[in-house]
Length: 170
Image (cartoon, rainbow, N blue to C red; front, side, top):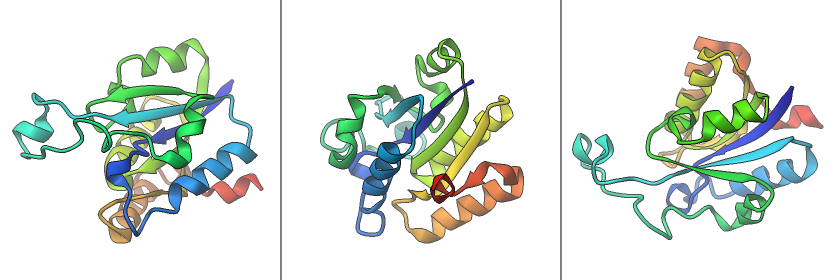
């Protein structure tokens, strides 16, 4: 059974003063721990999305906002990048086929935003029967620590076994 580090939306738009250290820590864990695969999910908005139509959120269409952060760019050469237009990685074209083809059953999830795409990806993975762990210390919300903590609390409440810490790997 293969495993994958799933890095959700580690893109320029989502980085700010409160979470700018997370990408470097993700890179350190990826260099130190053996993962069979490294998978990046990259959110790119589109004009017809509900983000635009319903929420009037007109961000994340082009570079530099949609670019993977510089601290993780080198890892994209070792990994694979999937573009998504929704909260969940499982709605990304090619993602499910890739993990199925490569017999990936254990997903280690980290990235941004804990209160959006990370929680949606993790809970959907859980629902679909994957073994999933969210690295609490390698996630953040660009809306601040309170949103991150609330999302972690929701995951612990609904699927307590999925929240973990990268330090468990030594």
